[in-house]
Structure formats: C-alpha cells, structure tokens
Amino acid sequence: MLKTIADKLDTGRSLDCKDALFLLQQADLLTLGRLADGMRRRLHPQGRVTFVVDRNVNYTNICITGCRFCAFYRKPDDAEGYLLSHAQVLEKVAELADCGGTQLLLQGGLHPDLRIEWFEELFRSLRRRFPQVQIHSLSPAEIVHIAAQSDLSVEVCLARLKAAGLASLPGGGAEILVDRVRRRISPEKIGWRRWVEVMETAHRLGLPGTATMVFGAGESDEDIVTHLLRLRALQERTGGFSAFIPWSYQPGNTELGGEEATGVDYLRVLAVSRLVLHNIPNIQASWVTQGGKMAQVALSFGANDLGGTMLEENVVAAAGASFRLDRGELLALIREAGFVPARRTTGYDVLEEYV
Picture 1 (cartoon, rainbow, N blue to C red):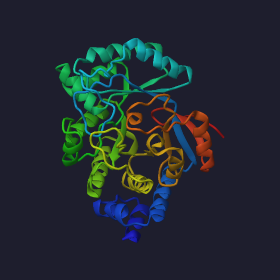
Picture 2: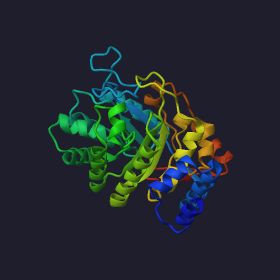
Picture 3: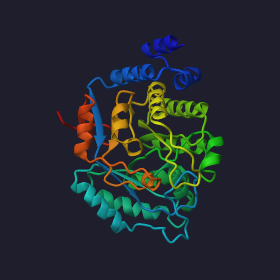
C-alpha cells in the first residue's frame, strides 16, 4: 500500500480516500513525515520558511451561535461581552503598522446588532489610513451573518465589503466540513455546504483566502479525510486558497471539554494534509496551539510557513493556550530547523529574506 501511494506521489497523481486513511491510521510516523517533507521540498525548493507580521483583532466576543468548543464567546446580555469601537480598532492597527505589519486578521462573534455599514465604514477608514496593511478578515460564518442582518445576498455582501477594502478571507469556521460533526460541536453555525459556497463565491469575486481545519473534538479519521477532499475539490474549481492551516482543538474552558490531541496526532494530520492537498501551495504550522518546538518539528512534516507573529490573539488564548513568539524567536526557530526565514505578504509574496 505504501509503495502504491509513493508511486502516486512521484507521478503527481492525487491520493484518494483509501490512501489518506491508510496514511492517517497505519503508516509509520517517520515514513509519513518523509513523504510529506518530500512534497514540501518539491513545491518549495528554495529552502525558505515564511511568516507574516500580523495582528488578530477580535472586534467583539458577543455571539449568538454559542459553539460548544469555543471558550471566547459571550452571550449578548453577558457582562463580559464587548464590542470595540472603530477608534479602538484603528488604534490597534496603528500599533501593527508601527511594527511593519502587513496583515490584519479581523474576526469576531456573530453580533446581533451589526450590519454591513459598520464594516464598510471601518474598512474604508483602515484602507485610507493604512494602505500597506491587507484586510484579511471575516470568516464565512460572519459573512453569512452580516448578509442576513443586512438583507443582502452573500454575493452582494462580499462585493460591497471588497469595494470597501476587504482583500481576502481567512478560513475560520470550517472546523470539520461534515455536518454530523458540526451539529454536535456547533449546531447553530452554517453547514459545510454553506461554508464552501461562501468561499467559492469569494474566490469568483477576486477575494482569495486560506482554509483551516480544527481536529481533535471527537470526529473520526474518515471525517478528517472528507474535510481534506472537500477542500481539494473546491481548490480544483477555484484555485483561490493560498494556504491550509490545521490546528488541534483546545478544550480548556469550553462546554464541549475533552482531551487535547497529542503532538503525534498533530504531526500525522499535518503530513497527511500536505500529501492530500497537493493543489494548495502552502501548509502552515500552528505554533499558537502547538508551541514553537512542535512547530519546528512540523517543518519536517510538510509545513513551509509559520503563520504570523500575531501581535495579538484572544480566541485560542481563551481556551488556555498561551504560546507566544516574537519576531526574533520566530527567526531563530526557523534557522535552527535548517531553513531560511522570509517575511511575506498575505498572498505569499516574499518581502524580505533573513539570510
């Protein structure tokens, strides 16, 4: 079986569901890592590991969805609920710009009172004051919610947000693209077909993005593979994904509870993702959930990117993960792993190599 899979990879053929399940469940971990590392080096022969200088601004923690795996959200009447003003968001982005940042990840809960005009006004202000910072913001679930609140179709909503300054969409809210799983962990959130529909529409309108997966919350191996195959099929239709980011569910302070996936689980899922998603160019290691040392190992299991320096992050931190890396630590981590660090844009254009 392993030889058949290796032959497929060597000849550029796609892995099927049976192949992916075998790798996920039975392949020797180091052998799996070598296969994924081989694909990574074929796609990225320069020996670079990239990162972006960014900030994750969570504009509100008020959310009507109430996902069971989320420790960040608060109900609309909760005393700990908040909504940042436009001035507060602009102040945070000013700090990002002062650090040479080029990417703003603006995400929040599904606030019951926010319509599209709130975002349009904010995006226009951001584009006017900080043209060097790409607005890489709003998950498909947020887009669907904003459209519904504003009596708009998803396509019109996306087109208006793009005109105001939105440049790309992060892949948040994908979790696992299997409705049976979604009904258990996030029953009020959009289904997998709606998530795909939003991303497909965004790509058609010239809004590229990234894709994600949250695993370790009780899904099956078959569910993980289904998620990957659905992303690959969407990428075949649109070519709109620049990167894929798998990260493990963080159970702390959540209603769902449970145990965190192991480091071995993470490396196995990461490597299989690299091998299945041959048409998504970049795979990002999640040091935010795994820590710097595990992210360093991930660079030999298919990852070629370490995401952002992330001046701020609140959602994962609310579940108890407290990993932090500054730019110097990120550079050292990459060099120690034998790669050349490179600062990039949201679209993966290299801005600067640190040789």
